[in-house]
Image (cartoon, rainbow, N blue to C red):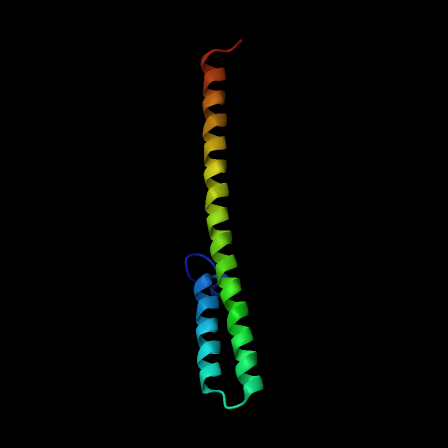
Amino acid sequence: MLGGLPMTQTSHYYDARADEAEAAAGRADLDNVRDRELRSAAVFRKLAEQARRVLVERARAEGIRVERRAAEAEEAARRIASPE
């Protein structure tokens, strides 16, 4: 695991697979093999970018949840301090 996530869900994993596919494309003798590896590399790069966007979105959502919980706790404390 890397950063609390299974390796298969990280941008590092996808970037590594893309690097491997690009290297395989460079070694390929056949055009169809080279093309397949380059297509694979492009897909892995897109997956890596998507994984990075997911992490950013998760962090943003967590920030919103933290703010909401803080506001709820403040409201609860205010109600306890001055009951109606």
